[in-house]
Image (cartoon, rainbow, N blue to C red; front, top):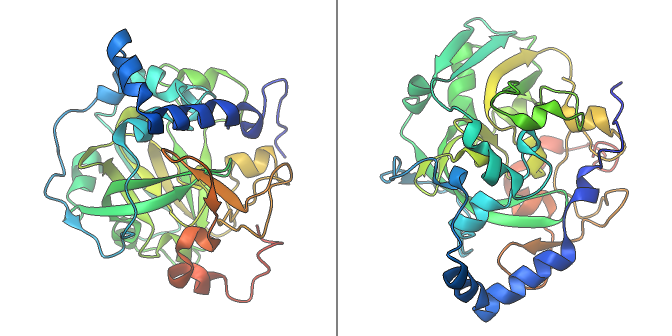
Length: 318
């Protein structure tokens, strides 16, 4: 079992910075941030501008999108992130991810399947017409966003590999290159970053192979050039900058579960009834709003995904 190496703090101890964030929300609502930005010529970090244009401007709106919820502003989506490969602070990814080279890029699909293949980014972009899916996303630390993603169902890729009867799980592995990801030089986790799903979760229509957001390709700090998006699970389950997808017969080891197993379970479904050992999950703060709202079971996607866990003790399998 991996040992979490202190004094590098756990995610919860690094963020959220509750007082700071509450102050930011208040200032934004009061209209003061724009004035301050104008006076100081404040600009978005370089990584947020890594891609220009609207590569997916014609993406088909998906019926899987949430309706009636205002998307989180692009600036917040691209400057308030967890991506420990670039640092443990929320602004570190936007400031440091310019070192990531999203092209050329390949994703190997392998393991318990009949047709393993290494996919180029261009091939992934042609899997199916790119959709826009507006999803709620909930972080285990207690904050949430509503993000317009662009991509295709993860199943569109997985089924082409023809998984065998032994394929019970799917493992995702993130790029492991300290030259491109300076945070890998730290001992905050055992690298490379890995995550995993049961195969029925991975094949679910909500599971997205993310290739963009807000109509354009993914900014580096948001997991360029390809990531997983799982809106009913806590955000760390949605692996970023993936280079390998592997079908396995046994449950794969995952980064945070290996580091702190009593705090980060394999399933990590959004569940307000199961508190994190150090804080409640009953309420959340939507970035850009003042105050908190109730956390919804499965992040509001219970009608779509609850059947995946029928008969399971969701407090034991957290």
